[in-house]
Image (cartoon, rainbow, N blue to C red; front, side, top):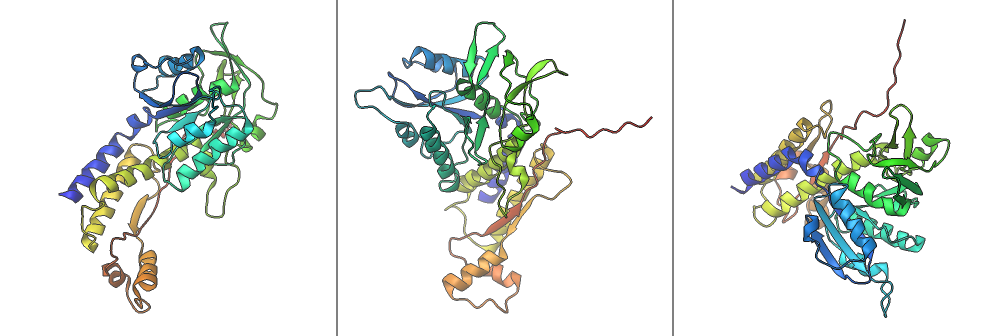
Length: 361
């Protein structure tokens, strides 16, 4: 029953992908004189801690203005008798799952560097696929968004946020963006005007910067193209990693497969070839459903398969096999102890953003 269970779980996850993407987890790091530790809230009325006035307003904005359904808050106190640094909050958040982090009380570049390194460590070393929105920080990394506006004037005529403060709103918008859309050209309801970030907006996008600007056609303040801070593309990477939407979908798929494997397969199913193939079948069923959900390109084949080369290397290096004359099927049939070697490819479909229109007359 275990393999049938994993197929059901993965199918349910794929079918709920769009709704889950709109209920992302936002994490705040706050410098607060009264509250310590990590707190999780699913609605504003659950907030009982005595946060400072400014911090309580930030939390209220997440729920009331940006529709967040799941908020995690990690606090440190830089004004304590024994001052705490941001490392205190980052230590609390080690291995904690969330989608987007904002740090509206952190303006020091050294602290931004610490946050950036934390995000990289979580993603690379702990396989915790978290991301952060930082103000005016060129992180050059797919897990970091570089928001560059300095002044955001709200429509009420009395409220103005700094760019640092507005990283909270950007994190909320990113966390609540569905699989069927992107942040690109999103109209910012409630925003009246913003500072001008430059004349050449295309160059700013190429530099991995996210910003707000006034769109004369829409007569509204909108977000620029939805890019993260990544500008350097490695030899085994693609330009698509620069897009916030693409990375979000990659992260969702990786996390769904990882968590389902842990819940329904790891330590619960024997490591025979037939069970490995059932696992691959479950993974590929999930991929097909994600295509139907609009997350993956229906013109390409997103799939996983048993990695013969990796299994061959394991057998030769760890078990002393000579696989030089063995067929692929024979290699796959060999005992690999507790190891399962899987490889795959996914083709994330981006949202429509650029129009090249020619009208003949």
